[in-house]
Image (tube, rainbow, N blue to C red; front, side, top):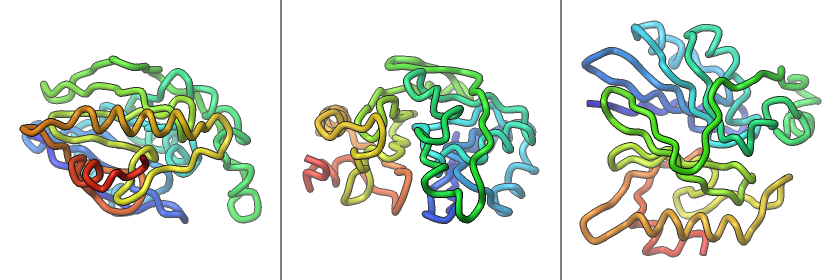
Length: 211
């Protein structure tokens, strides 16, 4: 059984998630775009953090991935199309947004590069990668059971911007339609977005968010 805890990190702020297997006492971090003492405390209580999942390559989602890898030994996961973002401070926007306050982001290499259809297991639960370009060329969502970690593709009542480097408005619209196609009369998903509050796929579909 897994549970999801939310930590607001960074100056924007971004939703960083800790996925925990409460029986095996292991975890996954999603989008550590900043530090959190509460997150640090939770991590210290775990036996292992297996992965650090990045939904895309913008600094406000990846800024502290290297730090948390050093602390936990977890593998950093990002889409192969956004792989260069961890090495390019123009693409990851840290040069644009951080230079006046906190300097430039320290670059790093990811450990695992994923694409559409990639699947891995955490606590015997399959996590599937869904390619959702638009906000960036390599944006992905991670799907586990009835949960979607949507990054900056889909928010509660809104969607991500498409005007940053490698973004594309038409691709974003298609990606949101792709997410909505997952919903059926018998299936709904809890959506954990990169910013703002938690929502559900059927709610956003009914509101035609992003279309």
